[in-house]
Amino acid sequence: MTPSIRNVLVLCTGNSCRSQMAEAILNHELAGMVRASSAGIRPQPQVADGAVEALRLAGLPTEDLYPKDLDTLIDQPFDLVVTVCDNAREACPVFPRPVPSIHLPFHDPHGEPLESFLRVRDDIRARLVPAVREAMGLESPAS
Image (cartoon, rainbow, N blue to C red; front, top):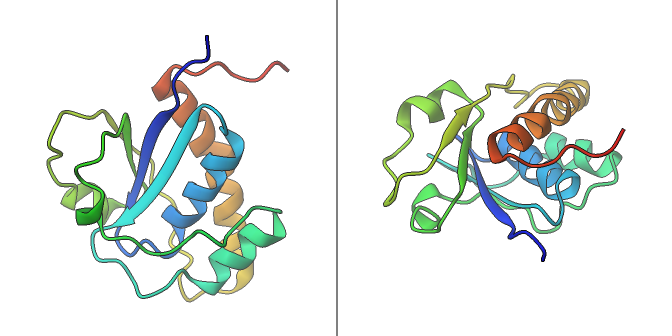
């Protein structure tokens, strides 16, 4: 029997950098176990070019990424909410049903050179993937 896929929401303020990279990385690294979505409290008009380029350089798909308003996703049944910035943590709304959450802040590379986006991308991969695995009780890959 295949375990059910868990739904994870990554939340930040603008949904243009960190949460977008986290969505793509979680969907790639935890494919078949987790379905990640991202949203913002006050979404920006588009995903930051640096975020798209950082993901592209890692071989991750970006064509389905776009800023989403939390209000459009709040009624979905999430198994975990991850806030990746302090503002989103403070403004995190009450969901229609109780949902576990973790807070894992990352530097905001918005407006900085590509190197900043690459560092944040790698930091998300190094810290967020294991944190979501642990929070969801998912098996770690065999080493």
